[in-house]
Image (cartoon, rainbow, N blue to C red):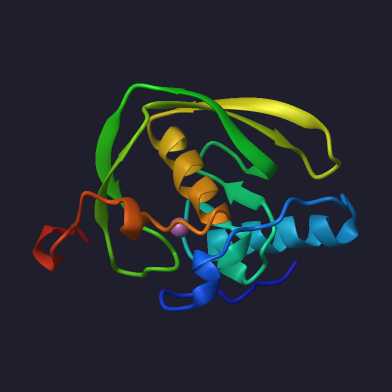
Length: 155
Ligand code: CO
């Protein structure tokens, strides 16, 4: 496994739409492992492939309940609403108030191409929405209600 560079705000790749994964090969497995290591090293709870410069529909999430690998994920159901602060490893030190559904159900493939569904509420639902947005070139700053001022950010 290896750490990859995290693309930061201002890089155009963050605004591009990702292509689906078609080959479930060793290269995909290495990408998933590198992304998980890169996310953990940066103390993040989620990372999408475009954030490491790869325009493919691949996401890793770990909110502290174990690693979730999502390939070609789609939101197939959602309900409720939550409003809270959100950050992003590509926007270090910046936080915004973002409204998200409180419950999200995702259909995805695993690293071998097997389809599965996974549900999340609260923080996990927020992570699904945030990371899946990245796959369509959408960053939290463009969907937030407002950005937090420096004095509002708890260290
Ligand atoms: Co992000």
